[in-house]
Length: 124
Image 1 (cartoon, rainbow, N blue to C red):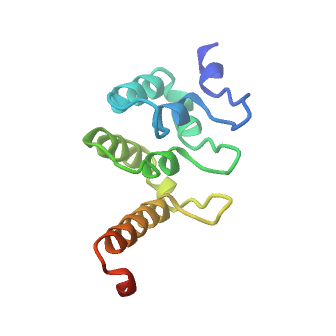
Image 2: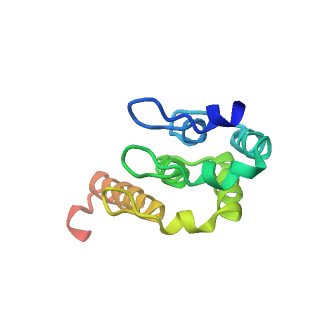
């Protein structure tokens, strides 16, 4: 029944309901309670739900860590997911990137932009 709906990835991006909770532009607050309810509702399939990959072979942590300006809620969600399935941190997507790589990419992009905007273009 309802666990089948949680595993549903019959959309173009192959996003599951957990991916949708974690996407940038998705829920700004309350990610952890939603994740907790979705996973506790179906404890037998919670590991399978957490490890679902989208069309680009990205897991829920890829989506959480791709958020450009993370909030406290995002960090709580990261902590919750990593506590349940830490191996997701090391999983590479189709670009060969782990979720942490997206954090470093955003940091580098923001640091480069800051330097350019403050007259330090050659110091990268």
